[in-house]
Length: 305
Length: 310
Image 1 (cartoon, helix red, strand yellow):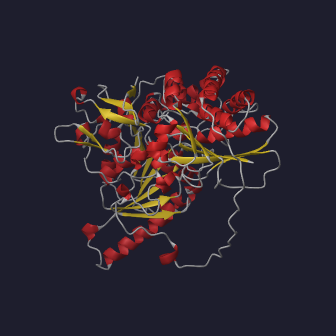
Image 2: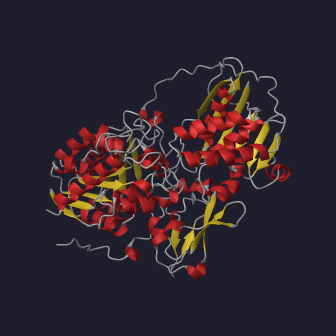
Image 3: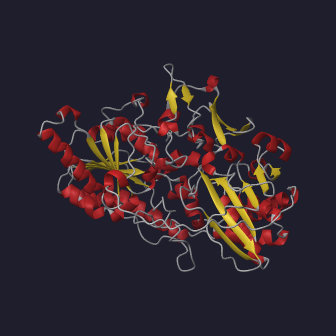
């Protein structure tokens, strides 16, 4: 069995990528299983999805604890303990990271164990599609290559899954072309589906009654959400060009998370520890004084229309 | 007679102080959070929030809370009943002299459209009938969002949700019409009801300021554009909200003791401009343009405004 785990940020397409991979395997005659983690599947929040591929019926269910291949859709996830990217990765695990760094640079920076390979899918998507958006087809194609699936089945699976999402035919075809270029471009690493890890022994926890004072989750602190830094959700960050700002307060008014405050002389200050990178301020700024920069590289990625 | 804002005339009058702090797990670009943050600036800090299960469950996900005050979590159907309990407790404490009257708290229900239009409708009806002194804040993203965008009674005709997909039988997706909860509330004759959209922050702030003068149920319906479920780029949340209002699909209005006033009269752009921005309506345009469905949506809006304008 090949066990593939996807990590992404909500909206990047990790869930669809796992479906594409599963469908491609199915088209090749394998038995396949794919599922996303159920929980806070939110824009920008860490999400995970799982694909199992085998020749024989798959009895295993649930999350993949010991993956053979891990596909990381956003490099920032490696540093995010909430994403639990490192769970069960060892030297034999193949790891793909969507980053502009080479595998060697990435390994040095992140100290990820495993056999690393990288490709800058976000950059390819920005170049080819001209906007940020889901990279599910690209992730799926790369995962398919690393899992040893054929080009044709990847192409077919992308067509099926994207059609299910209601995408138009030209958009699907464009995705197929770019995804297959990624399929060809990614440097492969040997995939070892080695010895299956023994499952942990099952434990049954018998629930007991607790009175509401004990059994209810009570938060006794006030306004402590600032301790949770959501800044890591960003793939793009809004950056102020001070000369262009006319001090109109619109960015402050529209920011859903309240991470923009105004100085006495009406200039916005962005709290990057908490900004989730929705780019509402970039879209709404009437003077283009806020621009979006890609988190890693620091180069201006796109401007609002 | 045109509606006049009395308290909030300029954008720089929006209070600087934040009452919903950052660090919540709500989606980037959440239109509901955008509306709540603005509302809370007027409601202030002396508030007990009673939160029905929904996306806003993620506001105070254990062990973190974005509020300086209290937040009580209830099931989807029972937030107004929870609010009754909190209100009664406060009243008893005040009557017994254990809480000074000036330290009284506002009771604010937070419910999504699934709660508001559907599961908590009866308990809301009961609370309004009992003239409960509370605020009701509905963040309406037109589907059961927290569980992955299933059809709710707030879902409009033609939208695609996970449980109303477009099919051969129903190429337009959702076949129902959006339930008119404003009119259902209004039939109860509460002192204050308003619709708001966070893209119009001064209109929103003004309505919360006006509501504070009334005792009894004060009900708000907030347009909550949803990048995750409506399928558009999170940065476009204000743009989507703006088009909802400018096309006339989301009328901004208030009702005082049942008397309705529209607080903004849009020039009414074609609904297409609003629909085209969102992936949940994409099937109305491609692969085959569904003129009949688009015409239907336009006709409903036209009829509504024909009635408004007499």
